[in-house]
Image (tube, rainbow over all chains, first blue to last red; front, side):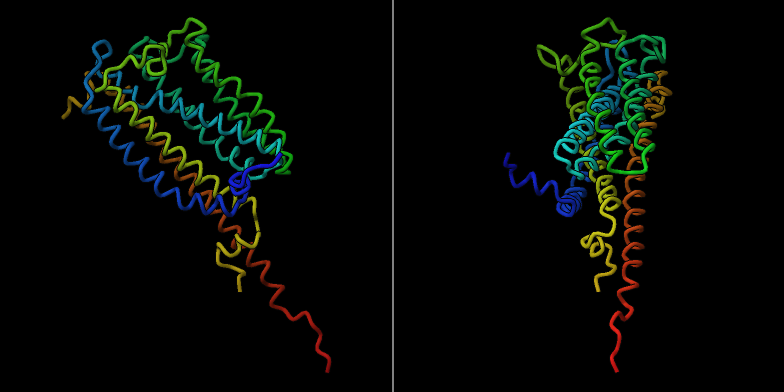
Length: 250
Length: 63
């Protein structure tokens, strides 16, 4: 099979490292601006909810952090699969970079969900609730992936073994997403991605979507910065790294 | 103004959610940066080590 040129470029560590250097200021800058705008809009400008009052304002961060957690997992699994099949080291570096970010955001989604659940459902945590349980499983998959990596001294071996865990575990992502439709859950059903369009008026939908964009950009920024560190760590004393750090070029 | 922080009695829930999210964002930016910097530092040390033997003369003078 003949692969397109961009595929080879994206497999080249120096190319991706420099691409990340060019993209990061834009992704990070725009991400942070949108986070500030979205948070202000959501907390101050958007009207209170007619049922939940003010506490509903967690909706501008809770679904977004949950979505970033799931997105991190998909990025990790797809990258790990590419790395496994084509033996592409850079793909493994992407998978490793996505894992801790995903773990943090999934933790964030669980926490914001808990403090939202307390005033609206009367409980922080509901054992056996499908949405909460599968989201918690997502966190454990990330932590399992990371600790399994730690068990290997040989990085190539760690890459290959953990790739299998990453790919097998990806089945949990659609389960988290559809859990509120497949089973009875105290969690509400989909608000945005549902038949008949978003069940939210524009004065709430606009800041909601701004925050979705803001978290997506911020995630891309964090992922690329982590990837850069991972690339430098893996490439060790390659010539282009030596030139990069300004040593040994003489 | 204080009404805004009280969030109609739900201030503790709303602000802890936003506070933790902000903390996680800052922590992740810091972790990514630290990892990148320490990897660069290690690369610098590796490059310096690789440089040393090259400076020594390897050709014996024939006089």
